[in-house]
Image (cartoon, rainbow, N blue to C red):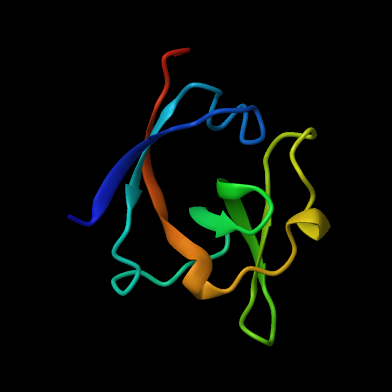
Length: 98
C-alpha cells in the first residue's frame, strides 16, 4: 500500500514526537531519497524498529541518526545504518498530548 501507521513508544523523539503518538510512514523508498533532517523508521539489529532523525550520510553510503531527546541513544550507539535497513519516512504525526 505504501503507507503504514505505527504507535510511538518512548521519549527519544520528544518533544517533536511525544510518547504514545502515532506516525504515518511513507514506505515507498524508491520515490524519495533520504535527506538530512528527515525523520525515518529503520530496522536496527539491537533496538528493532526505531524512528530517528537523519543527521549524516558518510562517504561509504551509510546513514547516521540522532534522537531529539537527551535520553535517546547516541549516534555512536546506533552506528551506521544501510539504506536497506530504512523502512520508511515519517510524513505525519498525530499526538494525543496536543
